[in-house]
Amino acid sequence: MAFNPVTLILFFLSLIPGATLTPRTCDPSFRGPGLTTYDVFLSFRGGDTRQHFTDHLYKALTRAGIPTFRDDDEIRIGENIELEIQKAIQESKSSIIVFSKNYSSSRWCLDELLMIMERRRTVGHLVFPVFYDVDPSEVGNQTGQFGEEFAKLEIRFKYQMERVEGWRRALKEAANMERMVLEDRY
Image (spheres, rainbow, N blue to C red):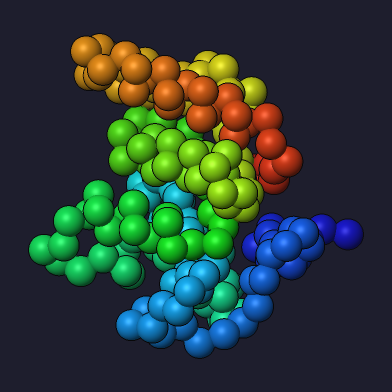
């Protein structure tokens, strides 16, 4: 019996020990001690998955009453995108990282990944990688089309090799986690 991948992700989120991903109304103007603004931060490469899988996932999460950050909807014109993304990651209980073939072509995606994995190591931030039409080994080892895109970005950042190495470590770490692997069916 085949399951809808979005339903499986919702189910997985409900099983994470210590997670309190319960439907609630989110009022960003109120943040008491220990409260978060979002239950889920979505990290994805827009051109690959925005109109397909990520859009379906986002709609399912919001229909289930799970406050979810997606950059399209949460950042207003004129705001500092980098600061708003940092803030959203810090104010999220968990992250779903949707790796796709071109994820590594975006320094924004890789910087998000660094922040997410750092929070995972330091405060136990919950992370669920989804490999959408890309093999986890290609992500972890930066091979195949994923690796080709990473190599192009690496050339652009050749004078920031510490940053590039941080991206490599974060990609390897995420690729070795419990995960979901999906083929492009949308």
